[in-house]
Length: 130
Image (cartoon, rainbow, N blue to C red; front, side):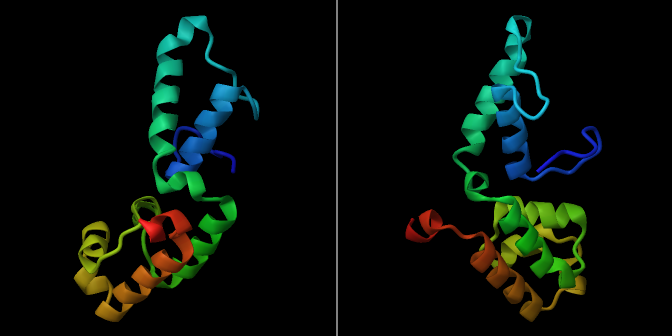
């Protein structure tokens, strides 16, 4: 997945992880941090190590696209979709915290359907066993 507009994009954790790995490896037209860019190298390393402990590591472009298609009927904002993708809410309360004016925009059935989509599209085998 390619970052189209580097200064104006909302990125998922998966996209950030992919981009930082490209920087670290010097792939996809990204330059590895040089000796005089030790701070950049440190930030990249620390962020990658953190994101490798999150569900972003098990996501793929296909999983994200499938998820985004399935939640389209809920008329969520880009930021709300991104938050749900990154945080993978498991309760109605979490959805209500992520969706602005949730009570007016989504019924209880809608929230349950949304939670079901999150569970079926975004839950990995590792998460199910823990």
